[in-house]
Length: 158
Image 1 (cartoon, rainbow, N blue to C red):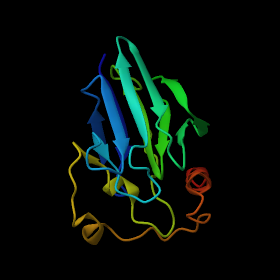
Image 2: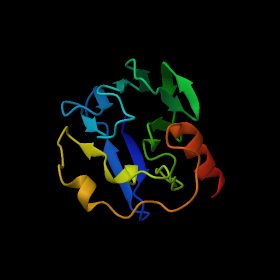
Image 3: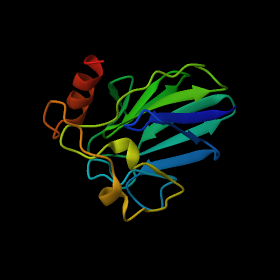
Image 4: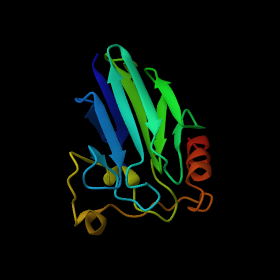
């Protein structure tokens, strides 16, 4: 099975993160396979597991939760086209090339730096990332202390 997490940067550029390992950890810590260095993301936020032809995710006790298709979940089986939300970052699940077309989803929260700019593969840290990011989003959105509500409001504006 060929599985990827797909997201879009604020400039519309598509980024793909292939799930190469049987177990992939996403979180704020540098030892995670995919690091999202934002305070709303837990150190070890969630885990994605590839078993044969099944892709699943499990929340690792994160403070702000993991969401699949806008529903907070502890565990879920992931299907092609599902959206996985971790903090302000929205990934679309692509399995074996499906869905063929992935609609860009804005992954920013008002008053915060573009979240898509901060996802890093391989547990590496770009210490200059915050200083070099594109300008802050100027659209109005619900308060950043409720990331899911802010994301839902931004997606409705599309």
